[in-house]
Each structure stands twice: as C-alpha cells, then as structure tokens.
Amino acid sequence: MSQPAPVPPVPQVDYLRTCVRPDWDDLPSGVREALADVAGSAVTRAHPSATSGFTGGFAAVLDLADGRRVFAKAGQGSNPHLLGAYAREAQVLAALPERCPAPAPVGARHLPAGAADDLSWQLLVTEAVDGRVPQPWTEAAVEAVHDASVRVREVLSPHAARWPDRLAEHYLSEPAVAGCYGDLARGDRALTWGQPRWLPERLDVLQGLALVPAYMLQAADRPV
Image (cartoon, rainbow, N blue to C red; front, side, top):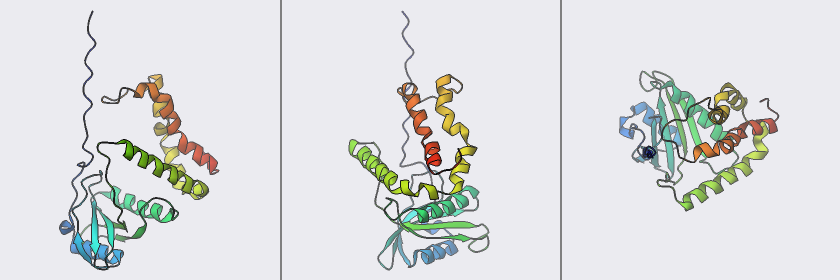
C-alpha cells in the first residue's frame, strides 16, 4: 500500500520583521518639523521605527518636550497608496467614539510636493499605546483580542448608521472578498499552498464571517 505524500511544513512568518521603514533621521527636515508641529511639541527622542506592518512608511514612537509620547506615521508620495491610506486612517480614527479601544488621534497633515522635498507627504500622529504583536499566540493574547473585539462591537453598533458610504462602495466593488470561501467550497477557486489543515472543513463558518459586513450594512439601511 502506497504511503500518502508527506504534508509540507507550513512556512513560519516573523510578523515582527515584515518591512523596512525609514528612521527619524532619514526623514527630510521639513517632515520632522511638520510632525513636531502636528504633535504640538518639540521631539526630544525618536524611538526606532517599527519593523512590523507592510507599508514601508515611517512609523515610530516620539517622546515630546512636554512629556507626552505619540505615535507618528509619515508616508511619501513615491508610494501613492500611503497618501490615501494615512489620510483615510486619520478620518476613521477621528470618527470613532471616545469609548472605542483605539488610539486617540492627535492630528494629521498633508504636505504638498515642494513643502519638504520634491514629493508630497501624508502625516498622522496619534497617542502612543503600549502593545505588542502576539508571536507566538497565547491563550491570554487570544482572550485579550476577543475582549477588545467584543468591546469594539458594543461601542460601534449604535453608530453603524453613520458609517461612511465608502465602506459600502468598497465592499460592493469587491464581491470576490465576500464570496471567496463559497468559491473554495464549490471548487471554483483553488486553495493556496500552506493553509492550515482545518480550513477545508470550516469553509462554511468562514463564509458566514465574510458576510458579516453585508449584514451590518443592511442594518445601517445601506444597499448590499
């Protein structure tokens, strides 16, 4: 009797080392000055940039002369995605209720080309929140994420009707996102290599989770 082919090991991703970002001293002086102005105080110390995430934009904790600590991000026009993403992040943070477990926004600013260098920049400053990427995951970490997710749901549910229309537009423009698990179950889409072994048995559950945004948009009287 032939033996089944061995299952290749699932590659491990170090989510603490997923990108290379510029440090504070790598930023143009005009960007550093603008970040300090948005933060509302001079910068006395810049911590090393984060090595997690995937954008490659500047992202670091800054110590300020007034004793505060903030988290600053700066995206350069050489990566146009960052300009829109950081601007949108500032809008979303500003719209969140105060009780939502998210960093409070401090300020944001767009620097047109020529203000700091030849490219445009998008800046975002929030309060600094202590935290870490769970690697490896522990029961305590899972419980903390679960509790925070439940709190977000409780805080945001009354505000669903005021969600930006762009959420519905984005969701409706990407039907493959909501239907990917159904496609996998029907065999219309191939499962990529390296997925957990339990995934094929849970496609129906995952499909239900993928439809949650649709249900929430319907609850907010938005077309789906």
